[in-house]
Image (cartoon, rainbow, N blue to C red; front, side):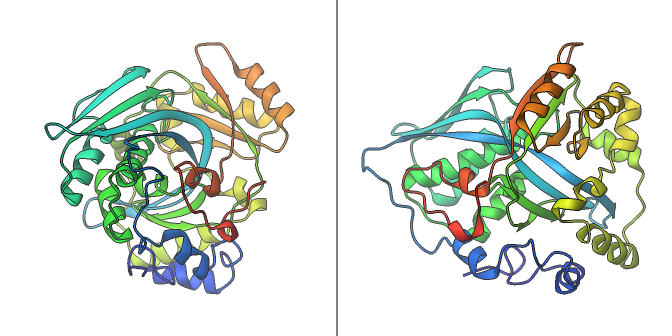
Length: 357
């Protein structure tokens, strides 16, 4: 059963519902019947083999096809409208559950990151163990490829992978609302990574509304080697306090641009401040556009910039042109919800809600 406020039959936000009824998002939002099947947790997770205690997952990165900061809320957070898209750049996460003293241990190879409680993956495992009253140890092996501080969501994706893996290995079933609350408590975009694909994010970005999958596209991601502080980026935006009138106007304008031909109109509000902090990002975006990217944009609050291409050869040529000069360049592709969800043994994926190109 769907829980109001997390996965409602209609968007919880009345403004979003009105925009959908008007037709600006109705062709792209996954039908209610498919959402129910996609998110149902009424049936327990069944292990494919009773002795199976370890599972490996790809923790895919994301880009933001559009990101609008509507205003500051009374609780201190910012109201957002964004379109998330999974891409094939990924960390490798292996989770093992074994008997022994209760605890969580993380080992990391590749890009160095914290391995204690400063790591979201560790906190995700701890939160699941507490909620499900699990005993024993959780061992997390992380091969890190997604650059931290890039706006590609690597830490959040790792946390979501751990949530899915621990639930799978333990055989525990918890309500969808509880799972999403745990995810949102870890980070605003962690709920998106539980499902992946293409989705609209509202609120802090934690309220997720799946969108119909688009055809596969190629994505060139350029990381300049510097990280951006998200709190500093928000501080520099200096957005006003949220008012109902402003929210009405912005959400309808944003939702009206959510279709394949209008991605380039969405933009990212952080660009106007982050490009001043790191001027080379503006040049990178301009270079991607000159190579034929549509759209090209900052991801999240940065510092990675990406460009979308219909043709793999054009994307490869753009990646070649932008390589060097201290940049890391990744040639990736979009990843569907079906691909994200189909990694666990015995996983059931709703085919109607997720079309693979």
